[in-house]
Length: 167
Image (tube, rainbow, N blue to C red; front, side):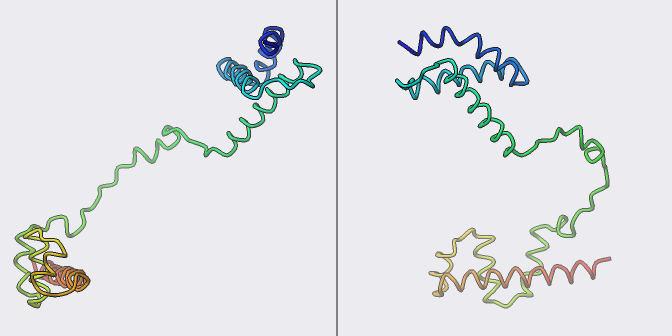
């Protein structure tokens, strides 16, 4: 009950101090509330001679902790600061593979060696997992990944050659 009586006496003084420390009334009210919560949480020690000064010290420490936390937060800029970037409208060139179709891939697939073509077709067109392909072809799962990677590399090369030869 000692804290409640002390709080009633010290609250107006703490509100004034919080108003001077904080930039807004809302922040000041939060600081006063946080001070009361901290004081209630730790309880007033028996050896406190000036309870008002004790509460003021708690408030000051909370304010300093808040300032330190604010200093560690990254600064956020508004999007208005980058308006020139947002209004930049360069035409975006589509990458060469943007116009590729499944038919293009199927057309160059016969150019691959059979071992790579099989793995690629099973994985891409049949939707089989590495494990299922490995079991079907009686090879290791790691070998499936290696062959699939090599098949993709060969397909990229074949599609690039085909694209260069198109008018």
